[in-house]
Image 1 (cartoon, rainbow, N blue to C red):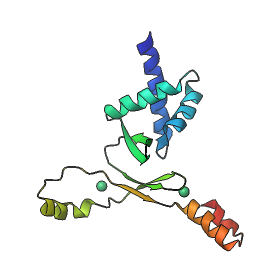
Image 2 (image 1 turned 90 degrees about the horizontal axis):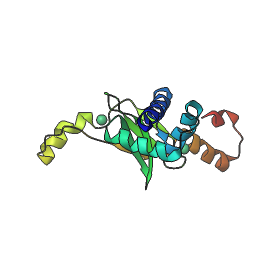
Image 3 (image 1 turned 45 degrees about the vertical axis):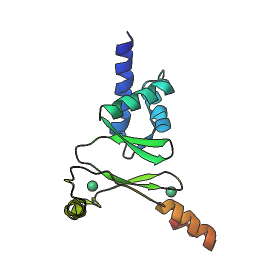
Length: 145
Ligand SMILES: [Zn+2]
Ligand SMILES: [Zn+2]
């Protein structure tokens, strides 16, 4: 029965997210889900990611044009910063907007009920490798970042 098979595949996908400590791209989800459910197809992964996002089980983060990564939609909303060079994402514990919502509500005249903020930059690793090629000093300690 297809629904049963779909359920198993969906469970495999969700367990991948439960174990993940960072947002995952569709390709990463596919690779990790295959370790649990080897027969899973990439199209199934895409379909499930779409459905789970629609059902608000997952949150979709836009990396750039037509590139997304996904996280479980936790009760406590998190913000992420994306590296423009390697797409690595890090979560931000502090909400960068919370303390400004009252002010923004006043300026706009809107009652603000939610927000979605995505930050972009260059991660430590990419900044390090850039520094390294600039300095050529071979400071090995920097590579660990
Ligand atoms: Zn990076
Ligand atoms: Zn926030």
